[in-house]
Each structure stands twice: as C-alpha cells, then as structure tokens.
Length: 226
Length: 225
Image (cartoon, rainbow over all chains, first blue to last red):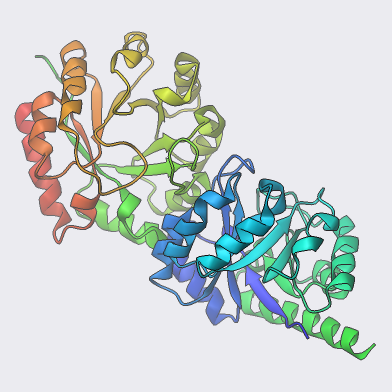
C-alpha cells in the first residue's frame, strides 16, 4: 500500500538560506525537499543546479527530490549523483530514450523519477512505471511557483492510479491545504509537492504539512477498504 | 596615463562558497571588505555547468540592500534575462560577447533597464570584438576571462594579460575586470596589465583570512593605477 509523502518545494522558499529552509521543513515533518532545477531552456526560468545541491547536502540529511526541468537531463546525472541528490526526476518530453536514462540514473546510485507536463498523456509514461520510484504529474505548466492548480489534470492522476495501484504518484503545481489537496488525494496521488501552499502560510507550515498528510492518508485508507 | 576616478574594486566570486547559505557567505565577504559581489549565473548551455538564476538574486537582494551585485551571465540567451535580473535587483549585467549576435542592442537594453552594462570575453575570443561597443560608449565594464568559464578553482591564464593591456592603453578610465584563478600569486600580472576590478573565488572564499587576501590584492592594484 502506498504511503503519504509531503514534499515542500524549495522554489518558494528563501533561496539565500536554502540549508536552513530545508532543515526547517524537515522539522515540520516534510518527507522530501523538492528541488526545482530549471535551465532557462526547457522552461523559461533559471533556478539552481548541482553546485547548490552539493552545498546543501553538507548541511542536511533531508531526502533531496530533484525535479530537473532541463533540456538535456542526461548531461547532469553524474553531477547530481556526486552532489548527493537522492532522486533524479526528469521530464519524458526532454529525452528520446527514457529507459536508458533511468538505467543511467540507477547506475549512479540515485532513485529515478519521470515527469509529465500537462499536455503530455499518461500513455507516454506507462511503459516506464515499473522502472521508477515515482511518476510526477505536473498540475501546472512547469517553470514558476505560485500558479493556479489545473483541475483538468485530475483524470490523469486517476488513470495512472488505476493502472498502478502501488506506484508513488507525485503531483506538483498549485497544491495547498484547500480543495486542491482533497482533489489530488481522492484521485490517487500520494506524494504531494507544495511550494507557496506551504511557504506562503508563514507560521502555519507544520499545520499545512500535517493537514495534507491527513487528507492523503484518508484517501489511501478509503481506497484500501473499497 | 590619466585615470582619474578609476579605483580598485575587489569582487569575490561566490561560485565556490557555500551556495546553500548565500546570505551568510555574502555577508561574511562584505564584512571582510569586499567592494562588490560577483555572481556566476550559468545555464548549462553556454557553459557545461548550471548554477543559479534570478530567483536566487531576488532572495539575496533584500538582505543586502546596499551591496553591488555584478551578474556574470554565462548563458546562451543573455537577452532573455535582462528584465528579470533587473527586477531581482542586480546592479550590473555582464553578458558574453560570444552569446549574442547583437551586442550593441543588448548593451542598450541593459542600460535602459537601469543596470550597468558589462561585456565579457572568453579566452579564445580576441579583445577586438568588444572595441566597437566601448567606442560607442555603451559599455561600463569589460570582463577579461583568465580561465575557460564554467568552473571555479582553475589555473590563471597569464597570456590573457595582453588583452587587459590593450584595453587599458586605449581606455584609461574603463573599468576592466579579470576573472579566473586570480589570487595573491597572480594579482601582480593583473595589476601591471591595468585591471582594476578583481574577481577572486577560491583564493578569497576559502582563505583563513579573506580580509587579508583582499587587502593585499587591493594594494597591489592601487600601486599600479
């Protein structure tokens, strides 16, 4: 049975103090630190790369869930492995050979994740679900934090959960402790990325993380009992 | 050589500092006497490394409101980030001449956004490529790379000093920056050639006494200016 995992996105945190931000969310009960890597080419934003992860790793034992929104993900596997990333999640749209790339990621000692943008159908990733730690379904167009949740991604989550009852399904984009967590949890997502949904609620970050975990747990229990 | 107004400025590069505590590291260097901060932006396309972009600068700016941020843009499309870097609070936008087909237009765009305009040349690029733009008075600073851009900790390329000398001869009052393997062992070459803006990474950031290293380099440059 899958478990709830909450993965705050550091994209919405204080980038000038990443180590302390990461430790802070870990103290609040976060399972992963979701790190948004953007190269300004695959998406129109430029955030952080392996050198930042390497620096961060020295200060934290948090699980670093690296989401690579880059146009040549294969180029960075070694750098991220050496930097201490735990999971390397690349976009299916960014490579012609996801299977080889997954193998390369594993051979470098990291877990692999595979992500789909809103316009990409689930069929594009179905051949690879047994090879990866998780599938990431974007619920906004990747590139920026603070965007609005796309509820038309719900059928995709449902479809994937139907095909893969035991797979970690991660969702990312516009999710917070409101109707969005209800919707994604009910549809079958169990790994929840939330940026402004967590960091935007100053003083209530733990409450939000706990609240989202509860919703996912409830949905998992409900599916298990039906 | 008349160079009234020209002074030595030391700008540590934070590339090899603790990037997970940029604020702490930056404050430490400013407290040790840094005149400005040299921030290396790499997009993994222009150079084979990916560091950080404007969202990081935006977080750093409010914490260091008076510090001069010199953005070294090692990116394939420097035109794309002018607006966002300006919004993030960057003071100077230094793009590479090799990364654009319209340097003049880009210089103007940078200035219009309220930032100073710097133009950088890689080791393999002749300094003649920037002269036209300096002559048009649309360039505030020329950056002469003394290593191949992309990574910290590389060895200084002394043969790049002829580029610095050429620039200093032609433009007594131009800010000329050097970046790459610059430290106490190599500063004399830079000072003698006429550089006045000194980027130094490992030699300052990893020093036991960054203040002493910066003072030593400042003295060496001021002596020649």
